[in-house]
Length: 347
Image 1 (cartoon, rainbow, N blue to C red):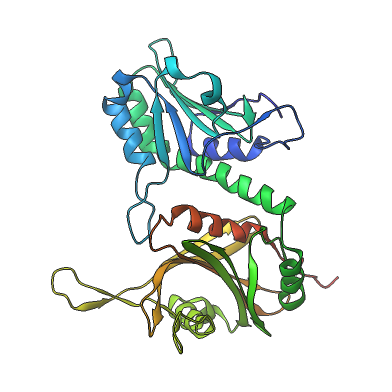
Image 2: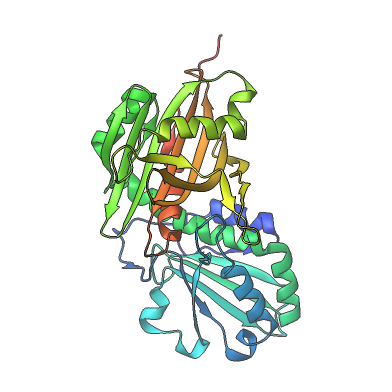
């Protein structure tokens, strides 16, 4: 659906329109390849608005730190230019937010357009009659705006994995766990057993990995945060650390900055809907028993009704020198590449 505009006047409308439009076309068309790095956003906004309350509100929203990372990293890396500078290669950026303040605008709204000058590309126009009206709009719809931008990045990752994946890992996951999954190119198998598979993507100064494991479902207690952490630790022991006898563990206590004592720490726990399936999303930190190493993790757990098992895909990042946001975001997208078989019902 080329050159389609979706008017987004309410938070739910923002999300619905982004899903409803065909966000990304194949690159077999004549469109140029979109420029820019993942989670980079080009904001086209003139100085009076950027230096005023509207710019302050936009920065607070877009640069708010991503939760559960070891250091503060913004949701998006914001690059601001004026409307007069928005031309040539800058129009081909992957994520663009154009800010228009004009008394002639009848209604404050966000308009989304896809693949305008390049592909895959998201161009959003945020318009309103005044800065005050637009700031008020962000108070209600800011989170939805972020979700649309993050969905655009997610869809790019998923589309890439659907075209470029590791057939060996796809087949091993299907054989062992009975689910279809497309593992993006770059991951390599590290270990596997009857109920466990570990793969990682190694970079010169970082590592992103995931491990899948299953165990019998024994009712709702199998999905409590205490049980999930306990099972995570049981399977994480199979991931060795850098020294003999060391292994991955979940951080369950953190130092108190005032007293220096350790206090209990529990991962964030939320139920999320992904497609037609509910998952438990758990975010926290890991380190290594017997050595010095750690980072953030995010796990997704659901019940595989066909097998009567709890199924978890647990993702971790180790990046001691560089940022962790892009690594953990890419890992979050893996759950969208998992497809369960339909549960057969008695006729």
